[in-house]
Amino acid sequence: MPMIQVVIATVLMFFLLVSLHEWGHFYFARRAGILVREFAIGFGPKLFSAKRGETRYTIRLLPIGGFVRMAGEDPETVEIQAGQTIAVRQKDDLVTRIYVDRLEERSGVLLGEVKSIDLEKDLHIRLDVDGDAIRLNVHPQALVVGRGRETQIAPIDRQFGSKTVGQRALSIFAGPVMNFVLAFVLFGAAVQMSGVVVDHPTKVLINGVIDDSPAAKAGLQKGDWVVSVNGQAVGGDIDAFVDMIGTSVGKPMKWVVNRSGEEVNLTVTPGSDGKVGIYPGPEKRQPGIGESVKIAGESMVTWTKVIFDGFRKIVFGEVGLKDMSGPVGTTKVTIDIAKQGLPYLTNWAAILSLYLGIFNLLPIPALDGSRLLFLGLEAVRGRPVDPNRESMVHFIGFAMLMLLMVVVTYNDILGLVRK
Image (tube, rainbow, N blue to C red; front, side, top):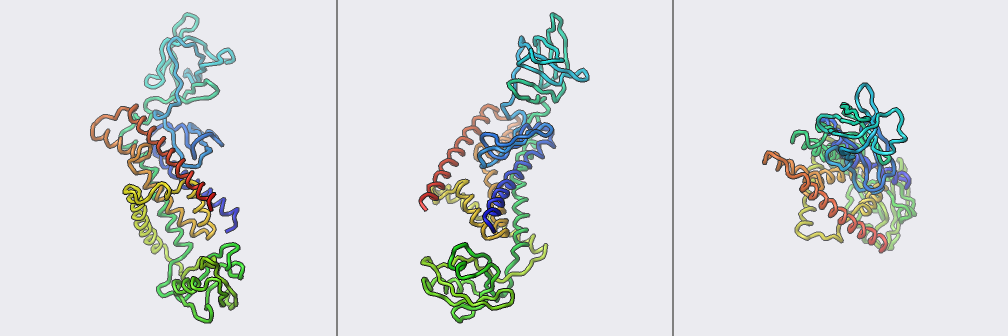
C-alpha cells in the first residue's frame, strides 16, 4: 500500500473507532431526550466546529479519544441573577433569546431588570420594565447570548440527571457496545478479504514485500508463489521455508517463483538478521458468509482473552510503563500493519475496537465503566451519589489518565529517537 494511502487509511481507522464509540453515547442520549451540547473527536483546542440542530460537532487537536457533552454534566451554563439587567427577544409570546451583555447594541428587544427567573422547571422570567412587572414564558430551546457565544438552556427534563437509571446507563454503555459491534464486523470483513487457510496447503504465497528489502531488490512481488528454494520444493510448509531463509544469512539463494502462471528465477540474499523482507502466507480459499461469522465470533473470544491477560500482567507488575505504548506507538504499529495491506489493517482495527470497548468498561474513574458503577450504586441505594463527589472522582481519574498518556507517549517518542 503506497504511503499516502497508508496515512489516509490510518487516520480513517482511528476516526472510525472513536466516532462510532461516541455515536453510541450520542444516539441513545438523544433517544432518552437528553440535550447533547457537543459531539467531539479528540481533546484540547478546537480545529473544526460546526453546529447542526442542538449539537455542536467538533474535531480537536489531540487525537486521543473523544466525548459527548450532555446537559447537566457540563459547565456550559450562564448564571442570571435577580437584579441583573438583561434584554430578551420574543417570538409567538415566548422568549427565544436572552442577552446578558452589550445590551445597548441589541435591537428589537425588551430591556428590563430581572425580578425572578427559572430556566429549568417553570421556564419563566419576571422583568421590571420601566416600573412595570411583567411575566414572560421562555421557549424550552431558548438561547442565552453572552460573552460572544450562544448557550441553549437545558430544562430539567432535558438534563442527563433527570433520566431514569436505565436510560442513563444505556446512553453510557452504548459507546463500548458500538466498539464490540464494529470489532465483530471488521473481523468478519478481514476474513472475507484475506480468506481462510485450506486444509492441506500446497503453496507458500508472498503476501507483501517490504520496500528496499533484499526481497524487493531481488525482484520478488506480492502475489508470487514460491515453488522451490535452492532446488528444494517448498510445498505449503511455511515454517520450513522460513528456517531455510534464517540459516542462509548472507548467502545467495536460488528461488523459483510462479508469477501469473510463469516460473521466474530469482537470486535472494538474506540480510544479517536472517530475513529477506517478505510477508509469507499459506494457500487460502474464499470463505462463505456463515463461516466468516463463525470465525469473527471465535476471534472476538480469542482476542478478549488476550486483552484480559494483558490487563492481568499490568496489575501484577509483569508489564511496566516502559513496555506500554501510547498514541505514538500505536500509530507506528498501525502504519507498519497498513503497509501489509487492507486485510491486515482491517483485522488490526478490529482488535483495537475490541480493546477500546473493553478498556472503557473497566471501573477506572473517568471511563464509562466507572460511570456505570456509580449508576449501579444509585440503583442499589435508591438515591444518587453526591454529584460534586462523583465529578471530583472523574476529574481526578481523567487527570491521572492524561498523566499516564504523557508518560507512555514520552516512552514512545524516546523509543523512536533511539532507533
